[in-house]
Image 1 (cartoon, helix red, strand yellow):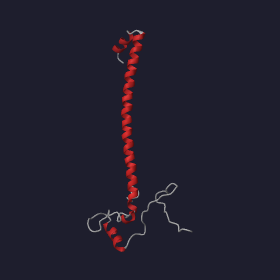
Image 2 (cartoon, rainbow, N blue to C red):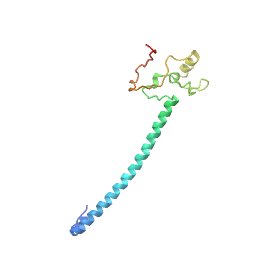
Image 3 (cartoon, helix red, strand yellow):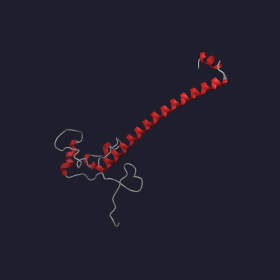
Image 4 (cartoon, one colour):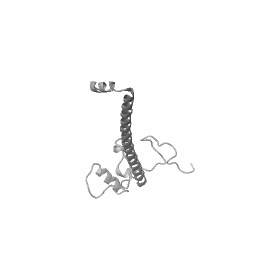
Length: 138
């Protein structure tokens, strides 16, 4: 507040000053309501995007599309992630890192480990934890 504003306020009566404060407060409240309304619209859009992301993630799981993080990228070949079954790997053409290994596995009959969906009523195991099947009745 500069000197001119202070001088203007000091010349007002108590009633005028109270009215000026109410007017200023109403302006501030209206501005805050507009900001909150915009924030609500942004939050609504963000919630929509999060629902879409969750739906997309669920669809990828149901389709068997693996989600590989950088920490896991070097631990698997395409067949271990079932990418051959999804027709996500071409054995006929192309040139890419690891092509020789993938073609050798394809031609020699397969891999010893494959990704599987995991569902249980408990928390999932930590990354890298071996998960084994148990024979029924054992």
